[in-house]
Length: 211
Image 1: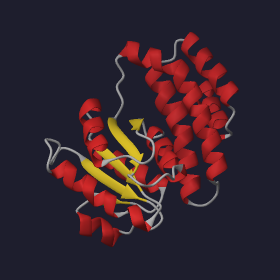
Image 2 (image 1 turned 135 degrees about the horizontal axis):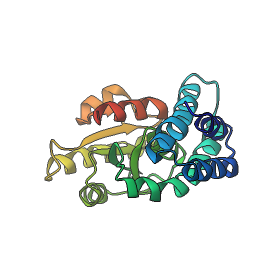
Image 3 (image 1 turned 45 degrees about the vertical axis):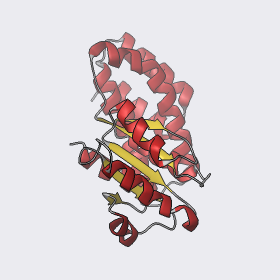
Image 4 (image 1 turned 180 degrees about the horizontal axis):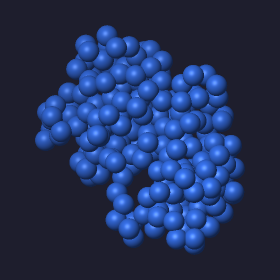
């Protein structure tokens, strides 16, 4: 592997956004393929962070700075990827359900999924079932991710699952759920497709759906 791709991965893991931008710019100028820069540099780096996060070797602050470095690098890389016709592995929409304003968990899942090469559209917090369905249609998403931190808002997840089943998205979209009070039993009870206990596992599960 090219030395510059190793450096992109290492600096991304360290959260050095400015250095990542410089290295991505240089790699493009040197004629490296945008897809290689994305997969062997940036996604490889986020993959390491995701695995470390799963094993409690790094924590939320380290993930946030790594994700910020990745986002900065992507700003430079995206035009080149588009020009080459490199598409994302898939598209998802994500949000915290209606009545719930917590977003740290949601943001982590979004970052981890982007770290797998999935294009994510963040709907924010307090998101209604109708908004999820409309956004999934608008962006041609195949994954809808629901987050809830309050036991009082968990029921809203069922409303989203039902809204998807009652729409033209039925059978075409996977509904993934997560959050502190959420369990596998609850996932099965409401008919959602997938529950994971942490952000890295959610990204792994989403990547499997898109293979």
